[in-house]
Image (cartoon, rainbow, N blue to C red; front, side, top):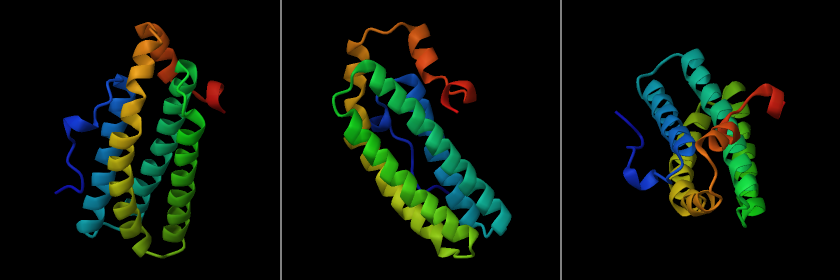
Length: 151
């Protein structure tokens, strides 16, 4: 049982970002399954929290990569991320306050947003990364998220 099936059309050609997207789809599916199976509020809330935290980490990684590669629409893309984060965090707070429907709203919103964002926006990043001619080591360092660098 899943909300989103991973498709090769989601691949943008940057392994760290593609891996993040796969994890995000998996977490979204886990949240869907927990809700569908009637898991406890604590279980659903835990998956919800992990999804939110991972999304923030992914955005940090993706924005760092775009900035280093000189992606021309960096500010616009960053704003799209910011708006999503604000919406998701508001839904998270609603759920924590006892509004169970916030999970349904999050699932529907993220299902549509994630697919549209990956295919419509993130696929445009790949050519810029390729054009930057970064080494595998440089890409790995950019993709690494640590508290010392981002805190």
